[in-house]
Amino acid sequence: MSGLVHWPEDVGDDWAAVLDEVTRAFEVTRSSAQNEGSIVYVVRQDDLLGRRGAGNAMVACGLLSAARTAALEGARKGWTANVLAFDEVADRAMVEEWARRLLDDGAVTGELIRVGSGHIGKTLA
Amino acid sequence: MNGTVVVTGAARGIGRSIAEKMASTGPLTVIGVDVAPELALSESITPVQVDLTSADGPHVVKEAVESSGAPLVGLVNNAGITRDARLVNMADEDFAAVLEVNLGAAFRLTTVLAPLMSDGGAIVNIASRAYLGNFGQFNYSMSKGGVVGMTRAMALSLAPHVRVNAVAPGLISSEMSMAIPEDIREKMVESIPLERMGTPEEIANTVWWLLTPLSSYITGEVIVVGGGRSLS
Image 1 (cartoon, helix red, strand yellow):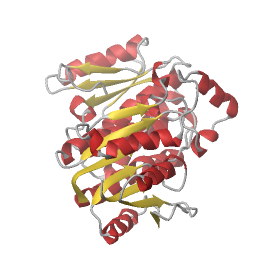
Image 2 (image 1 turned 90 degrees about the horizontal axis):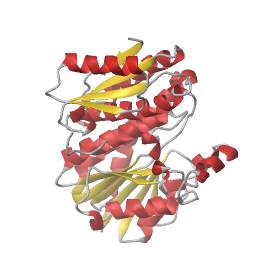
Image 3 (image 1 turned 60 degrees about the vertical axis):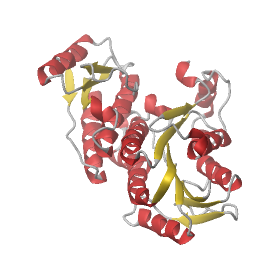
């Protein structure tokens, strides 16, 4: 595996905690980009829909947008940025397997990949 | 509509246009909020000069709403800044400043004002088409993605009494877009199917519609107003 898998921590509806979490994501992503390494953010599908509060939604949706922007920059250098969203059915091993695929493959970038079926019929994010 | 509407980032550009639109279209008290000292709006707009990233900023706005004597029927979180750089060169302080203003201020103000909102009220958060990704804007794009997340979460938590939606402007003729080098801006315009930049008034019209009962069955949505650029 060449790259980094980033799992954000849960935050409450507290701005300081949200800022800490997105800053941590920024720092690891910048560091990874400086080394031309790929990155995968792992978020909950529920958070992309805002179902677990504003704090977690701001982090998850912020990471999705960040990945899309990082992917644009990485495309020129050969590294990728993607987001994996999982629902309550997906277990950690499944998510890690998909993260490995994304880091190893290199052909997919700027994408949101959903593990599980909880997203079907919901907004496309 | 009858009541008070708060618009942040109201000194210029899109925010000013939204404030003026709201003031011109109904018996509303419009409170225009901005950190800029040149917050000289029309007589029908009440100016509140405050830094929304400060601890007491949202509470200053809350006091202005309470002083207006009219129920709070609308909130437009528009204030925003850019500090562009490639990700590998982005400074810590530029990341933090953009997140604090574009997302933190909106979240904190909404948290303070939401309990004052009347039944049937509406909140419109100004995101950006950059939430779909934009080169050199890791901080801005993340902040606007965060605004989208906040919009969805608050649409759920404030329903059924208050609707919450987002507008994502594309390239709009404003001070912010004029800061883009001309040659790059021209290339961006070439990629827009409608072959021009949008105007602040076009964003204001969309925001106005989302604040009124004309959009009474819409909540938790993001409306991109970008001339079709997301397709090209």
